[in-house]
Length: 378
Image 1 (cartoon, one colour):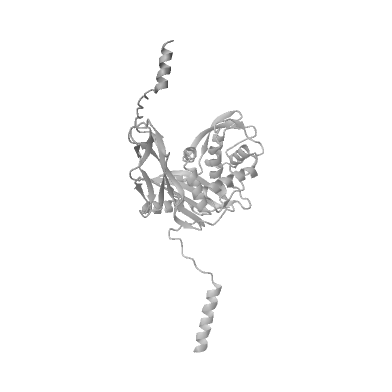
Image 2 (tube, helix red, strand yellow):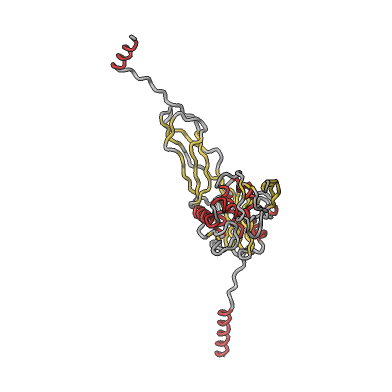
């Protein structure tokens, strides 16, 4: 009996050592190897799997390339594309040697049809070469707080070392969607653009099918390479709540995002934030020593638990104002932060007008009076 028991225990131990552990299935049935669901106002991660694991990110890279292009200015200046830059494999906006284009049109070419030619043309236009542009990309990533990211190419084509984490891509998308031009471009299912030699109008179609598949989606970017698999970054707004989602290497990315958004909108609500009490600023040379301040439009922030204690505020106003001070004058901001990340600036306005204090005329002294009397003789 003891021999049989020993034999059974030995077999069980062998099975335990030889068979791999079975991991619990994702509760939402998400196919992606890495993902994050993020509250866009605060950058708070609501759900995550391998969220800080650096992975290939394919054409979602173009979010950064487009952001840098839009931030560089001169968006509507015409120029001839570099012929070497546009000789690149993969998806294209259709640039040909000798084409005349603007940076704004290149942004459409990157965000809608995911043009690798547009990404390379942007890099060469802004930095002179792709390696130099990669330095700009990584510097901007550092300012955003992307700590598990390294950019090598502007297009996202597979390259050694090129990649980012899902959480980092969420932070990038959050920053990019605060740019009005970026938001306006990536929210369009199709757009009419103008470029060529000579330039002529044509239509570009967005590869992001989620724009028409799920209510409230307003962006952002698709991606695919053999190494990265299917990648998708999206942004969705409903009832004052803004969420963003990132999936990397997903077999079923469209449904992944819809499942994550269903979860997010079921758990996150928009909550108003009360401004600090008794805001005022000192006034110099006025009929009053201070003037009260107020906000016009209250701030609302999405929260999944009603707890906004991590939300901090900085009153950004000059130490004092010089009279006269008009009513309803914008004099500063309330800057809100969540765990150190900037959330919003809420303008501050004066409640009342403060007039300048009238100065009493000085009584002339003896010598001033004598001098005035002498002048009157001539």
